[in-house]
Image 1 (cartoon, rainbow, N blue to C red):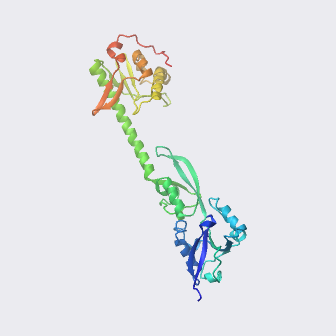
Image 2: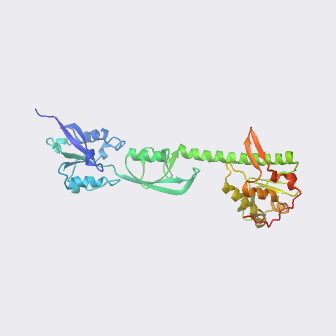
Image 3: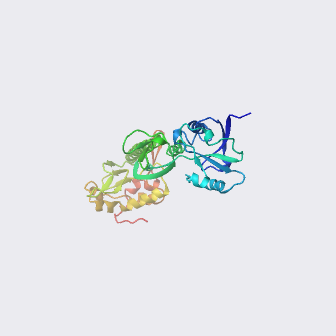
Length: 356
């Protein structure tokens, strides 16, 4: 009985020959329908999703899987290449199945041997493009990373997933979002359309708001503690940043308190570490020199005021006055060694004091 179908052994170029698969097709099927059949096969559907069937290259070959000659070894070699490309006609003895109404029987007049690969499907072509980089806060940089991917939706989705992105957005030309690899233009520059980047930007903004609130509450808590518990009159100084005549920032504090004779410099962090303590001591030792260097009229009056020796000594090992949130308000702890009542009578520190 004459069979009306053919069983063809197929392989995607770049896959190991052992990954070949079979398709059963009518002998009178035209080549354009064969391409549609291959495109919908589970072994190729991810690779050729959104690729027009007419753009799929299909080649007839006769490569033995048992004798393992030159053509077989060539297929194995191509497995190690991310985007394999070879002269299928020259290296694999291939014959291109032309698009149109030609039938399979023009290429396969009878059932091929079972131990042969009959069809090679060439992978989609590559595309190269650039994606804008972002810093850790989600702000765009004037830097781009180049990507070269095969023209497949699967690889494009994997790229988007790495960016936590839904699509790419062209930086030039039409502003339409790109969700399909077929819409990618070679050598175009894109930004990512990503909730993740937006979340980073919102987190950064919210973090800045929280930092400012924490700094304000900290300086107010210290002011109240010094006033109520130590009977020490202080005021919040309205300036925090020392800058020179060119507008360059030389030193910045999270808050400044002043009295008739003293200045208190506030350094607030959500998580205080030993490195922060060390940096604080260094900044304290540079405070007066920075004020002189800046020649800032806002800070010049502070040159007449002095820090307290006991507080500086305490800062070397434990920090200054400890402030932390608790019970709905900020709690202030003042060490016995830094009680204002004891320190009032001590000799004031000279601005030339050098700390390690």
